Length: 212
Image (cartoon, rainbow, N blue to C red; front, side, top):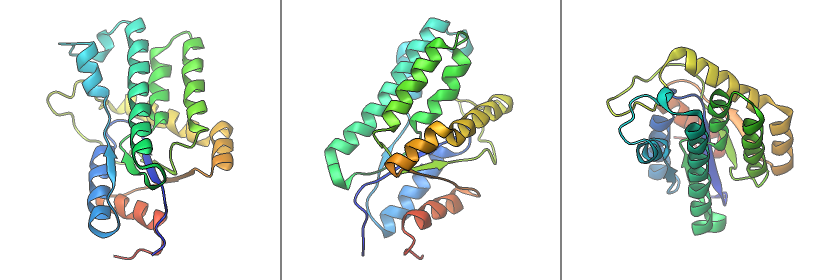
């Protein structure tokens, strides 16, 4: 069959939309039928535990520390994507639980003066110009996942989720991103339904010739 060379997929969406579950479901279906897929999981909780040991609520973190955290999680995301890409070059195949776009809404929320935030956003758009993904998949807020113990840093409050979701959609719809997609050939599409259905939608989009 005509296997594409790089297949780099990143999900974007608010916290609690089931991105982690979708990544696992997608990898399971693809690994069984098509090819082996690496998974990039978010390092946010791990980094939060290192930076703020014993902290229960993210709202208690000082603004300056929140900014340092924003850079730490963005750097970790980019580093992972680059590591996978350099390991496999033309045959890189990964699905990432997040995209760099997911960090934009939180940067806005954590920055009152906006100047810092604009620099952060610029960094993200500059990175996107290098085409780190072949496909960017928007995961809408259709149902909400609950918080499990040890997940204090996860976004599970519905108002916060709606705000994040709106900001992610604004970014996706922006002329800035549309221009980048036109220049790089990066493709954006959305999925809906159960994790199983969502995974199937991604598969059919990337491998149109594939039928179960």
